Image 1 (spheres, rainbow, N blue to C red):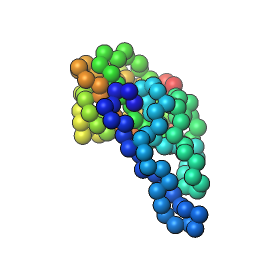
Image 2: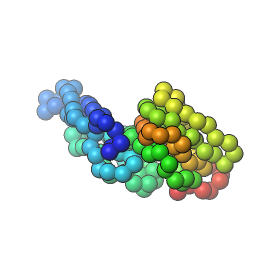
Image 3: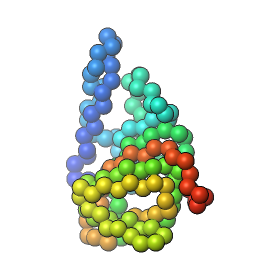
Image 4: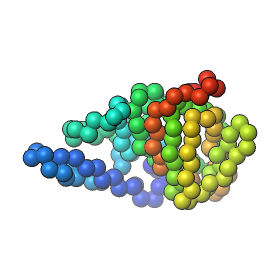
Length: 152
């Protein structure tokens, strides 16, 4: 999360030794480097909420293929190159700061702070034409692939 001035705080709940609800993690989101940082992930649906292991891990495109859910923060620096791609997921995104252009095969949409995007497994790319980084948070969930056959 090198582009953010202050690392975002992550609070994760769980159960203590007596089975009572408690905070199990309270601190900065683990920084594994790269443009995307995993806040939390599960590898199954429904999720297994037992245990106290930290599931944040270095981001990988393979995470979109394991049948789980991912909570990710993504930074898009100014001038970032175009990378058209699709995944077999539904992605719920919110722009936290900066502005970014969502490019599609036909058309595009510029989005900024407070805007929500629901990407339903379509071929797309992100472009930052501005002078400041764009930061978005999102949750990805497995989805039935679209008929395009272009998932990455």
